Structure formats: C-alpha cells, structure tokens
Length: 305
View 1 (cartoon, helix red, strand yellow):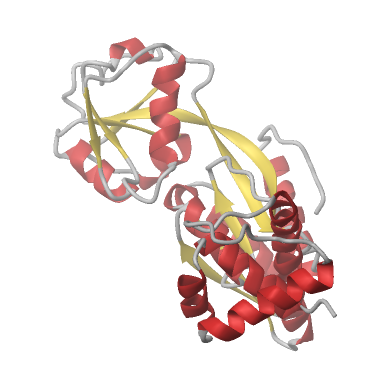
View 2 (cartoon, rainbow, N blue to C red):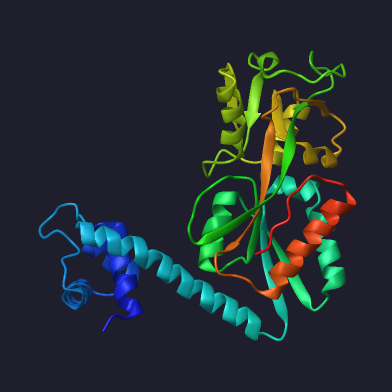
C-alpha cells in the first residue's frame, strides 16, 4: 500500500542524494529508511534508485516519481494549513512583504482590509521574495507581496502591477538637477548601490539585468543588505541607487529622485499564495487590492484565485 510516508521518505532521499543525510533530515535511523524505499519499489514494481551509485542517482522511473511526488506532498501540506485556518473561529492572515512595498500602497491595503473584515487579524512579516516562497510552502505565511519572478508549481503568483523604477541620488550629485529622465548610460560610471545582497536572486539582480539588457555594465557595484541601508548610503553621498518609485514615500531630506528613460525600467509586484489556497480571506484581500488600484487609477489586470 502506498502511503504518504513513502513519498516523504523517497523525496528526502532523492533531494539529499544520500541515505544517511536523508535519515538525519527525517529523524529516523538509516536501516528503516532503506527498508521503506525497498517496500516502495516492490509496491511499484520498478527500480527507483540505481543500485550502488555514488552519489545516489535516480533511474528514469525514479525521476518521474519524484517529479509527481513533490507536488502531492505540497498539496497535502497546503490542505492541512488551509483546513486549520478555516477551522479557527478567529481568523488570521500572515502576510510576507518586501520592504519597498511598505512605502507604496501596502499600508492602504492592510488598513482597508481590516476596516472591511475586522474579524480577521492580519500579521505582517518583512522578508525577501525568496524567503516568502519558502515560508509559504512551510505554512508560516498565507500570502506574499514580492517582486521577484520565479517558477514553483506549488505557488500561485498573480502579477498585480508593474511599478516604475527611479534613481535615488544625493542633492549635490551632478545628475540630481534637471527634469528630463536619466538614461542608463548616464549612470554606468557612478557607484551603484544594489540591494539586498542576500539571498539571491533578488531585486539587485533585476537592477543589474536592466543594465545588461541595454548592453551596459556599471563600473562600480556595491551590494548592501537592505533598502534602508542603500538609502542611507545615498544620503551620505556614497553612490546612487535604482529603486521602485514607491520608495519616494520615505521622504528622505537628503535624497532626491529622477525618472529613468529606459522603457524596461519596471519592477513587478506579485501576490503569491499556495497553489490550492482559495480561502475567502485571500479572495477578499485580492478584491481590496483591486479596489485601491481603481481608486488610484493604476493600470492593472484583474485576476481571481
């Protein structure tokens, strides 16, 4: 009989490519783990792992089984998390967000959602897009607001809108004055502050890709840990930074902003949830987002979960 533990054990062995490490990850002894994998192969009537391979290698059948086992485990985990949330009398939504969205419309979204649905508690967690993907799959958050494009079959990602990128400079910078948008070529000889330095890929890679698509390479790139540090260094005249337009909401007295001429200078904002999650709270939050976008006349395409 095929059981969920067989899937969980096989995925651990396949990902670790080693029975000892997989046993440690699963907190079981190695001999019982080996027996479970043997039982799985006997039940399926096929060999999943090449015998004697070092490091461990999957057969063609093993690769096929792994590709389908992982989404099944994700669905089971999602079902558990969603059922637990629906079963609670006091509903809670844990939302992950990247720092730059806090200076845009995210506060308006959360405020209006709480006004319309006071019975639901919303808890915010600052984390990068990569961290949000992991937290969603582990059930630590229910929705993520991020900027990074990524593909994961267990995560549903809805593009909310594309936000303009702009340049942040200190007031005395040679490029600070003027009304005309700056060109990327104007920036290549400047010290470019990008964030976050880890984990990668991140918004930093979006900025660097912008130059790469224009066949340009910045002379001096400095990676910093987070947005607030980048802006502090800009104010301290240590360089310039390319940021989403919503960062203007920080109102830093020693930072000025200029538009970018490049037509590709946009950063997406994604609404990310677990693939199967269709709970009313998330549908309601998406509706609030679209209402606010309509109020501000922001271009967007409406989608449902």
